[in-house]
Length: 260
Length: 93
Ligand SMILES: Nc1nc2c(ncn2[C@@H]2O[C@H](COP(=O)(O)OP(=O)(O)O)[C@@H](O)[C@H]2O)c(=O)[nH]1
Ligand SMILES: [Mg+2]
Image (cartoon, rainbow over the protein chains, first blue to last red):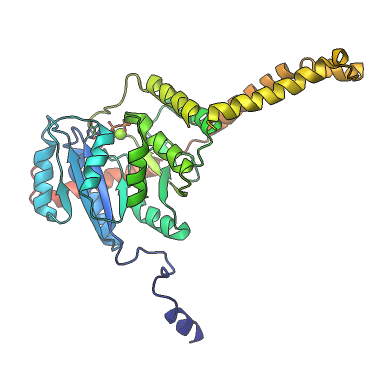
């Protein structure tokens, strides 16, 4: 009896014991897409499932860059199915890159937290409730998914790719000491104002952008929590980053090393 | 201070300490001969040790990199579920 009394008299702002999201919290998911016709309905379905099961207030913002495969048309169907308060279409005419897609999407976000993830099913929405729990637990500014810690991992990578990934991660950790174990991953939760500030500060493009976000976050003394995630390589469609990925990674790493 | 500057400072500090100790006699600083014999090749030893540590760490992490078979299987079944449910909701793929 005494314990129920005690918990009843707790201040209203205290989070509940399971660390569930507060009622007034809203999570905006930014989904940049380019040629993701096959993946988009599946990722949206998984997102809706995850959010409804955990009773989380959400919206999904789809930023399609004029994909020639008709991603936009599928997105419009999804908007009809799930309602335009849940699925927001904010397309752009042509492929303008990932970094600006986030900026564009964020302008339309009404949530107080922003979740950034890929639409290619390599990031599973089942981890989002864990991100939220983690955020509440430490009152973090950023929660980053990590493939390199705990139960985190990958699927569909051969030995060569694992060596490159682990090697690149090791060098990055030594040179930048960023305070987070997965710099190149892009499955993260941010406080909205934190993301806004970071995006203003970040200058790099493409792949390096994700790295710079964490490095700047450390500079600005933002706190970062981590949740292990399993990264399942895309099943449908193909990666848009490739070719000179390693070269641009090294360039970006050295730039950050010399300038931050 | 940038990370690059931090590294340069650290290396300069280590380097000059080492140089001062090995060049000891010329600076009037007398170290026993055995000490100097150990000191002289120290940077080379250090380099090899660091290299081995790096290779060992990366090797260990590659070997213990989780293969998420379970996650991949789960995703496959969920994709089937999603397809069926979305088709029921009227989505034309
Ligand atoms: N809007 C938009 N989305 C993009 C662009 N380039 C990539 N994407 C999306 O960003 C996510 C990650 O891209 P992906 O090619 O899978 O990169 P990878 O996972 O690093 O190989 C996917 O959801 C893509 O559809 C772009 O120029 N504009
Ligand atoms: Mg991908």
